[in-house]
Figure 1 (tube, rainbow, N blue to C red):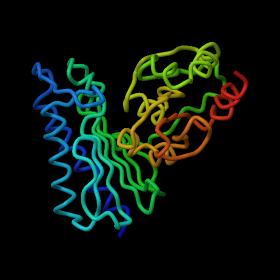
Figure 2: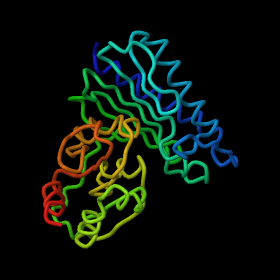
Figure 3: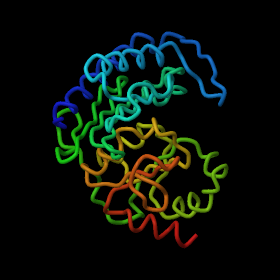
Figure 4: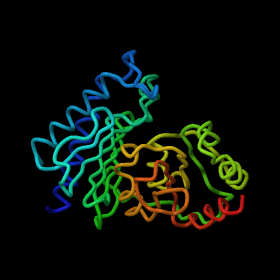
Length: 256
């Protein structure tokens, strides 16, 4: 199956799902809370149901892993769609536009296609293996800054640094960079892929939080993976970083 076809489908589906979420945005939406105390809204469920229906109609032999409704479909398929209908539900609930619709396609265990649409800012970040990374029709490329002292570092929740035993790495890096900004969730990873930040730190990540980003960062001349240098989406943690500063970031981590 050609990646370009799958890519076009992912981009279109992420965009349409994102437009669905806007129908609920800034409407004083109420949330329910799951067993892990994370919120879920009617918008999350509506967007995921839409994405699932689109995949099931177009690619009925594929499997689907989504945040709200789990794993479904053909578990023996080499194709697995990984979806997060709203990454950044806490922002969404408060009318903050820094949330994203994430769709990644895993082929034999590796993310080959990714689309991350940010409805509140109308930014579509996407990539497929060998096809480059793109932001609203323009090439997405990571920053070429080579001095940590000029770097912008983003994060989602600083309390997670201590909870996941990453506080030394966090503090060590914080002392060396230009500025720290809490532009978190998927939006922070998008900022790295488009060169507006150099590093995004997430010490805890579910697989659906990561779906599109390995291929997007790779195609944007960057890195997405674990805090110890394993590229990919299956490590329950993530860093996005420009290749220009990746060695320096890991050197800081090593020496704290």
